[in-house]
Length: 315
Image: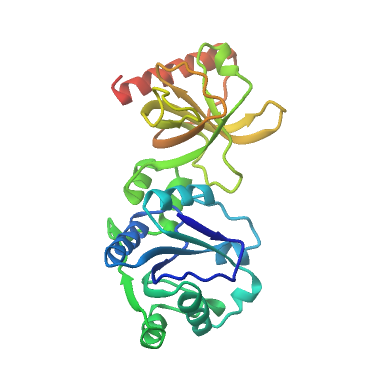
């Protein structure tokens, strides 16, 4: 997959089918868009995903917005989906002020060489988000492209959207999140050194410090599973789904900086995996964060958590 980033001046030579969207959370609606891209790819068009960086909502917001999917996570998803081009188009004031007809002509038609544009019913682009699916259709003949508008996916009568997923994550309703995404919510990154407090209790864990913009569910303990990706070949655990239980909360790092972290205990696992990449999938919320009067109380609760996790995973 070729990634085009940090530029508003580029040109793709071959004709493309382009999907437009934020793709935050990569829920079932997004997956439906990519399904249409695959159909167009089978008809001879190169596949391209177009997204703004930052998103218009983040650009105009005075408060930092948390992402369901980080840039690295989106890239992994699109690469695995076989996308040919990922365009991370800089959303700057000049682009925010661009008339929607100009966006269609200069960006979609000229830069992306679009012969098919795939978008959701609520697509918006151009000055004040005035561009919509109706304008895409109106300009199609002049621009020489087809338009495929994807209807909303519903779950329990409600439209599946990034907003819906975000609400569920904030409430810790991970089973609902899994239903909306079609897969459990993932937090990924590099395993880092922590304070090794769990090791002193006989319960060693691996630590992940997600980027600050990653949306995490409420602090507490979650049933989970993980995938480890070794930097070396032939590791027996590489790419294998491993049962685990995860705590989300503020973690003191080795330099005593408190940061929201993801701490995971892997069952029946004792390999040294510092520096390797991990994907943590959160399945179900077990309990909220608790305070303990002593190390003994903490240890007893951790043992109960681990035992409950074994029952949950059937191991």
